[in-house]
Image (cartoon, rainbow, N blue to C red):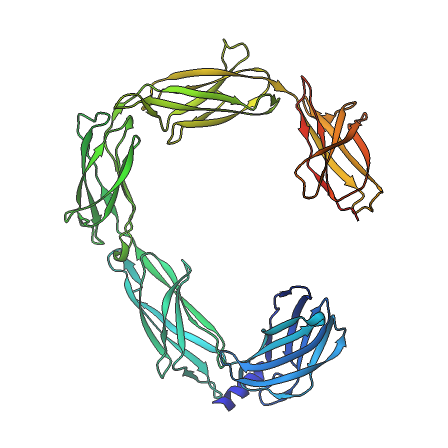
Length: 543
């Protein structure tokens, strides 16, 4: 067998070279194994092993060893000499030869670098004298499944070609089974003496199924696929609510039935299935259908447009996947009167053209008295320059489970902001208090740079940047004072260093003596028309 394998491999004479990662070694740099190969890959021939490697500290020693893939028995361990390049980037060749065996041989390399760095044995390449194999006759039986019949069997054969051209089975070899559509392992099996295999499997949806023969010391890898079809059985769902509707805080009974349709078209109850019941004003609950597919549940009525819905997602576990279905019951409108509290608009002052955030809470009467948060209330925001004539809305949002809302709007001028609740199936309309916001033009400091970096102690550091303002667009902000601050490394305090003034292009520059490592930044204080701004910090290393 091994002699036959050698003859086949001699025709192939291929070698796979694997690029290795670059393992970092603290204090001694990085070593990279770039490639590893044999000077002759023919089985039975003598060859030397060549390794290309690089290290920023230089390779001082390099050793290779060979073993068959998945077999830790060492075939040979060989020392090497550098034959070209440098110790930092060169090629090493084994000082002895080794007889190249049949099969797939793994080359491993260990090395040492300058300053005592070491890299233990790592895989660097494969001398691929393995035999080609082929998976054939992959069959799924049955090849068409449904929601209630998801079990099937995969059969096939693993073969290799003999020297006379005929195919022969490969026995006692692992075959992995994969659901390629969902990228899931389905298990594995072992071929018999003639290379045949058979394995049971299960699917709950259509899939491409792969059989894979993993490579080992003798054989290369092989794969074959087949498609298994799947029919998700149709379902239908009903839901009924009391004709007189519900009352806030009171319970009412919902009933219904879940059915499934067989492949021959008959409808019947689907038992043991989970149905989700919910409404726009109440928390969802899950119920399980009985033997005839019916269900019944007590639901507490909450404020809101009470449209009761039932949903079956189709997941029936080991029994397979059914098609989704849903139903909606007639509803009863139950509204409550909300109230807006804790309204706040900010920041203040705000930059013109920037975002103002309007925040607050919406509450509603609680069944036991007092108030409670009003979730899912539809809240809008309006603006008024004089607090009398309102425009908008400038946007809408929904309150969260705590009745809170937050909505960003654009601040174009000074004025008042207020929130209101839009009338819907859950809530009556309501208008809240207003909050006045003063606006100013925005400013920014761009391109701040402290240089040179690094700088010698006692030399001058120049802190420079550009101050800009935004009235209708970003433009240079001339003849304005910009204060320069310094913070030494390890300190949390910014110390005033001096003041610069912008030129006609908004540029400013400030010189300071370098004394210690630290960061520099610039600040414009703003005025009645313009916002203050602080630049990003720039660090300087002082040596």
